[in-house]
Amino acid sequence: MKATPYWWETVPAQSHLQENIPSRADVAVVGGGYTGLAAARQLARAGASVVVFEAERVGWGASSRNGGQVLTGLRLDPGTLVRRYGEARAREWFEISSHAIRALEQLIAEERIECEYARTGHLQAAWKPSHFKAFAEEQVLLARVFGHRVELVSREQQRSEIGSDVYHGLLVDERSGALNPAQYVAGLHEAASRAGVKVFEAAAVIRVWREGSDWTIESSRGPIRAHDVLFATDGYTGPASPALRSRLVSIGSYVIATAPLPPCDASMLLPKGRTVFDSKHFLYYFRLTRERRLLFGGRAEFSQPTDASTRRAADILRRGMTQVFPQLADVRVEYAWSGNVAFTRDQMPHAGLVDGLWCAGGYCGHGIAMATHLGSLVGRRMAGEPIDHPLLDDRWPTIPLYSGVPFFLPLVGAYYKLLDAVG
Image (cartoon, rainbow, N blue to C red; front, side, top):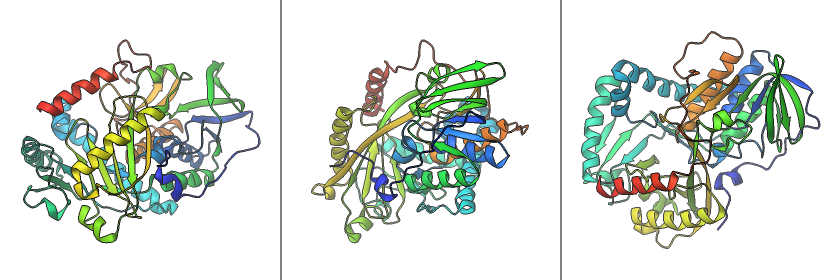
């Protein structure tokens, strides 16, 4: 079983090392994932000189490790959005998430990025009968407040969508999509480079400090001075940005991938090729790849990913996979990997100035379209556009008594397990 993401083997190995880091640039971007590359592309197209620092290689983090689900909505469900913000503001937030998908599709088309993108639609699967009843309430709310149509499929009829009897009905949203995340981030990198962005891999940012009107960035490959700095490190934020680190909680997400399945077997699992996630707090999410592998992921542990936790999680996920699909009991699992997902205090994405540095992140597992959209937005703001947008809010809430080490994750995990058991 390979301990690297399956997606990595779908893109050719490339090295993008630049010989020398320039002495200065208009903007230095820290993080070579969706957010950083989208922002860098936007800034370069506006005429700025932009350098991207990536500690590993482009897209090494969540941008090439995720499940490739491009989902409508946000981390917070529609009912919570309405209760927290009221109907008008909740509608605005939901429309932002829909616009993010449209903007992603436009960028993919404009830059001709080959990443297997398709509007597959998604299924949310009810783990308990009470969850399906909640789906019915959500269907009404989505139509009334958000003008968003979804369909319900009863447990008796769900075999038309999923080859499993473990769930208690489905909510079907036709507007979601799927892509190959490694191919997408590689294409986004090429688009940024065409715009004039210089990307430096194996260039970890160690320290950033203000000198006059500029910032000095010390990296493992040398220093640079820049007028503005954007931290786009999300779940991989380190000590170089303590203010951002105190606003993001990194949680491990784990994925396994099977050997390629025969066409008839794959079509029985997900007849319409949709992506899926279920209604548990310790949720499962899964989909088929173009090679007909089943990718099956989830928060198998509330912990920081390590080799040991990834192995434990792989066993948990395999048991979960065969619980959902008993017909896969004898199918070989060929890949198991992990990565970080970043959560914010209010479970909403944010961008803005934090201690004079631009920051963006906090996608809470809904990052493909939103990270691209938010990166482009913050790039436009940094380039001088007078954008008034709810996502660009400098009042990014901190987490009390938290400095970046999520000591409380085991307690959170235990609480969510309890909710799954009794809810």
